[in-house]
Length: 273
Ligand code: FES
Image 1 (cartoon, rainbow, N blue to C red):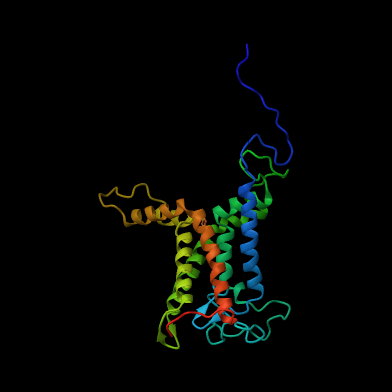
Image 2 (tube, rainbow, N blue to C red):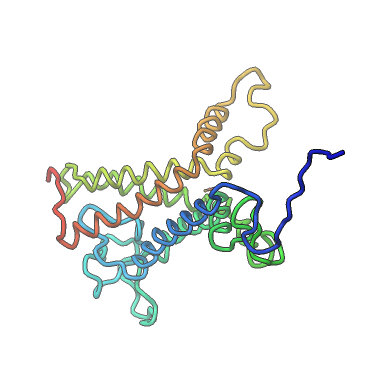
């Protein structure tokens, strides 16, 4: 008598699966989105022209530790960069970009993010490309050896908090041009950028652990710990971490693009100054 269980033959080839849905849409869209957005940001990091239009500064180079004194139209003024111009001994073969200093810490934070890891492992490494889909044949080593650095994510969070504070500072500084208070479209765009990155950062798993971890109970002494409210808010953001990851990344690109267009004269910034 038949047991009623039908056995299906399983192919061992790459991308073989018994799934009937269009499982490949998500990794393909992820690969496309990451390639476009990070590709744009990398290109801008290597050639940071028109990243400044007083009082706006692109998040690609913010906060600027050093700045090129010449050769990059629309670069951050020397007196605005924390340490002034690139030193004379800087090798000519290397790009003179502020992006490779403090802003690079934000990239390290994103690169080691638990969400992004899962996304780009599936989209690019394809081991496997999706659940129950056979991946490329590779020996699984986990995040050891070459990928050991992924364990540093909690430390990149501390750096990202510093960068975030700088972005808020620069957003509020964008209310002032030559000491006069005002507001422009760029001010709003920069503040939204800081807000979306806050949503992304405070939904981080490591942040959630930092503020809510190592506690057995939030109210054991009869008083609800303030950490409980923080943890609850972080949990709300954590549940939407993927959303904030994409929207904030896209808004960084948009903020840079807007400042580029205004700084290069292609677009006129509406403002009250
Ligand atoms: Fe995504 Fe920390 S887990 S930023």
